Length: 199
Image 1 (tube, rainbow, N blue to C red):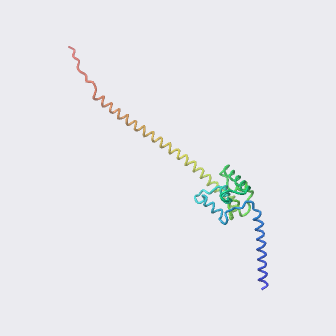
Image 2: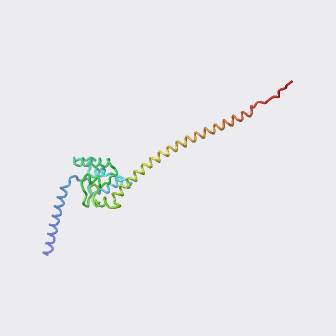
Image 3: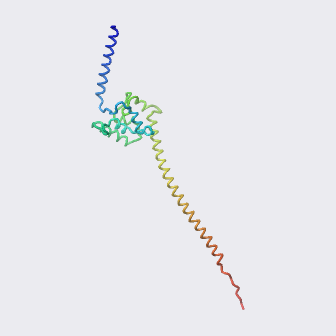
């Protein structure tokens, strides 16, 4: 019985130690998110990730820290402006680089703006890291967009040329009809030569 009481007291003490450590860590946080228990990955999915175009880091930051659809704290507003500026300046930068430029090195199992479970090493990676793949995907999308615009322009030019060709063909048909009509009129109105008498 003493063993059971001792075990309960130890587990209560251990719980109190962890609880106070967690409270101290939460107190150190400067920019709390306001999404409750909703995972950040779910917000990413809802804001375009399901369609293959996930939102940029500034959008994720805003969506996770907004209160009544606006940012409240000055440091949060400043950080959002900084993130937005970096994303707009170079949209091809991997998210981990933007995070590390704005928030410092990410070393733990929680990368700022990605939620729990996403580690910095996953985003940095080696030869085929997620960051490189996302960057390559972003570049491919930009290339596809440029190619689609060029294709659209070429299609419009092709339509214009086809229209001009059709107009020229119609004009040539009219010219050929006029030529045939003229030739027919020439053959009907050829002057008949009357013999001249020399008496």
